[in-house]
Image (cartoon, rainbow, N blue to C red; front, side):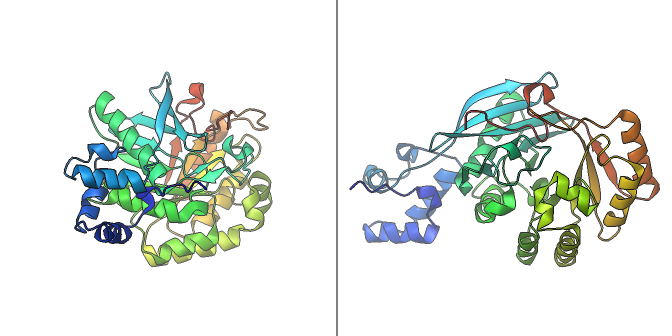
Length: 347
């Protein structure tokens, strides 16, 4: 019987210390290995040059290093870059770099596929294949940052967990990846530059609040009307607006972090003044801000982008009622890299 070796990136420092002690090596080797794995992202034990050959061979014998690989990239006319990553088990995910003025944003995935079936989202048309490990999530950021340094001469400035999948349904690995990204022994980024987006898993929003998060939270809202939101997003049938509002109030009271509401404007569906009124009422319950998002066409999509006139009136109404609002224009639509378009056809 062949027993697969564990991925060393999923082993705790304590377990790795115990491993070295068991094999008559000093336990500080564990911290050396962890630094090679995360700060330098070495995916070959032979490159860990401050370890003896004996210790490197020992690691080869007992562990593997699972890692992502970039196998394709596409560049949009607006400069947005979409990356295709190969994941173990012959699966694929997508990530995006979005260059904007003084920032470079990395949009990363947390799952292969998705189980939530939001009607405006291409990823929602896939099924869920697997949760990404913390290392696989971290790899996306590290590799996109390497690309940014090489081709933009500056690092990634912001990270959004808004790619494929629902982050809060893979919360353990998402939190671990953020810890690695923000650690001085990892990439050393500020948590204030990280945003985790969720459709609104209320139980997990409360759980995050209890751990005093060092990152921002965004909610895929898309309607402040229960009937409409349930039609757009199945999750609303079990996590309705009342439950969501209660969870977000708890989150804000515990963390003082203002959530951001993401709202895709769908022509004739959720872009009327009445819809804006309902959104204002929802926003007034908790200090928050709104990101309005242009709808991006997906295969077999049943929606159309809101008109410029309707969008303008919607924004004006929100601003008149003192709602902090920003319109996010589509980026990377020509290469299917825009919001809601990430989907791998051969998964």
